Each structure stands twice: as C-alpha cells, then as structure tokens.
Length: 92
Image (cartoon, rainbow, N blue to C red):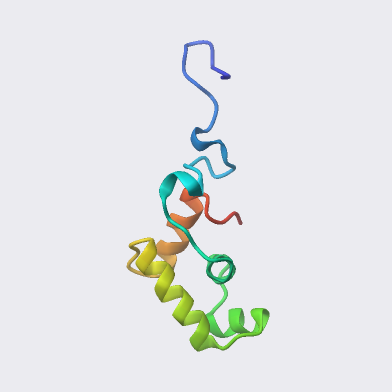
C-alpha cells in the first residue's frame, strides 16, 4: 500500500477511479439501462435528449430515473448522479 512517508495511505479507498467504494461493496445495483440514463443525466442531458440518444421515450427515461432515485435514496436527479459517481456506479 503506497504511503506518504507519514504512514498515511495515498491509495484511494475502494480501488476504483472515483475513490469511493466499489459497486459490490455498496449493495446498490443498477441495471445497465439505468446506468446509461444516469450517465447522460450526469452529463447534463434532459430526459428528452437522453431518450433520443438511447432510442427510448422521455417517459421511459423518467421511469428509470425514478427507480435510480429510489435505489440511491436521492431527492432529485442531480443528487442521484453525484451519489452514483461517488459510489463508483458511473464514471464521467
């Protein structure tokens, strides 16, 4: 384990690029479609834009986002995106 010379680890916990715990450590499971919707939301796309990119309706995107917000206990899409990034569920 790399350290800074003072015994403090410089390695990111969880061993993933976001520095947070691995998805398997969090117990939160998102489907591949949920991850796609969340990724485009995190990149600033609206439900309509995400739907156009993925070839699904805006209502279907909203359905997936609602499920994601429930799974991540997030009050809105932005909080869900931030939580997912911190948990390593998506990478921008």
